[in-house]
Length: 248
Ligand SMILES: NC(=O)c1ccc[n+]([C@@H]2O[C@H](COP(=O)([O-])OP(=O)(O)OC[C@H]3O[C@@H](n4cnc5c(N)ncnc54)[C@H](OP(=O)(O)O)[C@@H]3O)[C@@H](O)[C@H]2O)c1
Image (cartoon, rainbow, N blue to C red; front, side, top):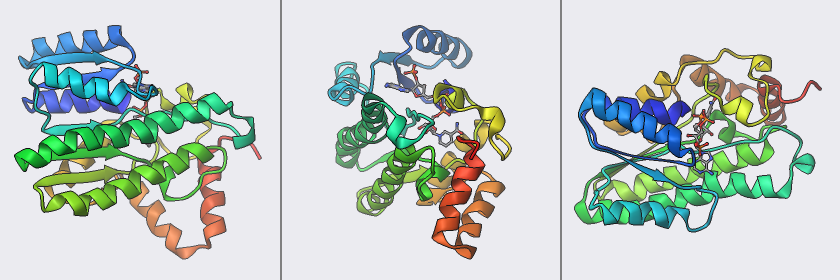
């Protein structure tokens, strides 16, 4: 769903065969069937919970068993939980870290080896503007996205000479079910929400232009630039204010 579905639709429209990965099997099968009919492409469905330690290997083995070579890896699955760090259940912290960081890193590691052997491949990692500084009210989420950004930046350089393109996308506020899923009222967010299409377009253009890091909207670019003009404390306070997780 959300940004992942938008990637599936755009890559499907470009004629790529797809492997869709998430927990919601019924939703994945419905999307897969629609894409097969609309685009005449092969679409496989891999239902896994990426918060489990062995899930990335299960995705990799799923593809290997079907003799699928992955040319584009889109690491998009992710979650958050709005609230003060000391209120969030430890299990939720672990789930966020497992999906946003561990699964993303392991999937990248597994599929990157095959891409290196073929000397071609593309890896898109979905981070967040939230990963550029701590966000009060979204502490573990912002920390997990900082991990996504720094890992992808290092891999951009490491894998470039091996024929692999890596780009990390840092969206701001995108209109999906993400905020509701995080227990976060999207209506309270103090900045406008953009459509999922801007994320997909930024990622694909970023890959084509061999960018290391991309920001999907002009507003995102302005917010990043403004960070240079104020103190770090102000940057962090403003990130919390714009996200509006808390009223204080
Ligand atoms: N929306 C925004 O404003 C925004 C801004 C910046 C960055 N992002 C990032 O963009 C990415 C996509 O977010 P979205 O806005 O599309 O949110 P979304 O609508 O909530 O979609 C999240 C996706 O991740 C999958 N997912 C979550 N937990 C999973 C798990 N344990 N195992 C497998 N799949 C799992 C979900 O599928 P199932 O529930 O079926 O498993 C769903 O497809 C995330 O990494 C998010 O951090 C979003």
